[in-house]
Image (tube, rainbow, N blue to C red):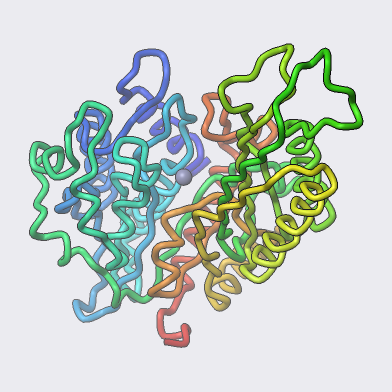
Length: 412
Ligand SMILES: [Zn+2]
């Protein structure tokens, strides 16, 4: 095995760099961020790259083309984690391209472009509540207001960045909006490839999303004295609305997912009181914005019908929207060709989760290669798994892609 076993070993070493004993938690601008970044930078140098921490704490490795005027291609993923994370989310997309460069360097092979491998300091947004801090800056989309955000201890991002040795004034200069492409390898974080027996797949689009806060107002009453026909039970109405969201998305399961993740009787409720007021959330996601907007309208219409019939009021606040990020068609085709060259049928699939690549997709051609994860596709969880054989195949596909990629093939 050329790559897989080493990558899993390195992922194990990074898993040991954690803020909490016994579980993996690695957040932005912490000593563990520094320690993980130094490990990664050492592996980059060992593989034949120059490597450094940039002004925001991203680690950037550079494998130079022979021609100093050559274009730059970016790849990489994030080194931070959620709380109690798995060990491959983000990390795989850093280790796989380092393994590719080590292989190229060992053979004395250079690429017709300079390849930069980036380990982003923050993608998950755990510490400061804003996500994709690293990729946003490199995509030229960093919002300076993020520096005023404070963590749970009251430390601002500006203070933490200063303590880390970063440089606020250099953030604008991190923008890489003239790169030829951004390509990210990542575990799927879902069961599609696993269920279909495929080790890798090509991402078509990174899903956009809408979030809704809904409040149902009925009439509270005595659980013993109010007869059933006259009731205006807010929780029973909300329950019907939850099922309506599910039914709508199930009928369009190939393009849409919808979740009610929170529901609560206001004030906590009581066993002998008819619920008078209930709040719930709706999260709708799709790789296609038109599909998602149509679903939002349809689901709201359906919930309003339920509210009318049950004589309860419905307040519907769609408070957050994120557009989908379609992946570049030419890059998808080239990734598919590299998969086919390994005797594997290319499977195209959307990404339901957000990724660093979506920040780049807004400004440069971007694409993603998914690798199968085991254990039912579970992620953001210590049960996340990746087989060495799958890491091997995905890295070999990535290397094939990098060796056959010609920046000028992309329409600019
Ligand atoms: Zn990730």
